[in-house]
Image (cartoon, rainbow, N blue to C red):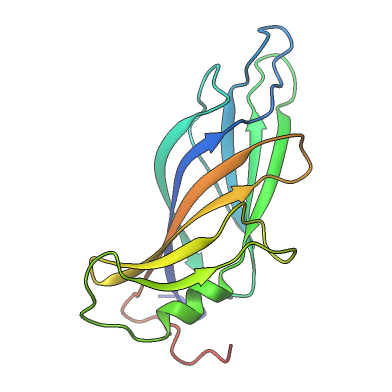
Length: 174
């Protein structure tokens, strides 16, 4: 096991809202997919045809080496005959979530909100985001406003996974 890895992060890409229209030929739609990148890791979702409000409900797992490195979500329109068009991007800041996980909560009722993160100029949140105790773990669901595009939001959820043989989060100085 790579001892520089702190643990794993489950990232659920749930859905998109009001994504930009990029298919001029087909008219009023796009064929969106999401590329998740963090450091040298790059993961993709499936393509959703003709849909500006796609539902992915797909889970990807990232190895986390540095919690200060943001996770970049980039949305693209799949084009058959030309390069894929970019439809905006957003970053996930892990620090507030990691701070919540490090609080060491135990035995809370499912659904207990342990932290509320407000949208501001330092994050891509479209509205406040809750860190919630769910099935013995902290889960954060967030609605991210896409940047560099006229419209669009992505709903995602993150969940930390401790891995035996990895450093974990307890030693971090945040």
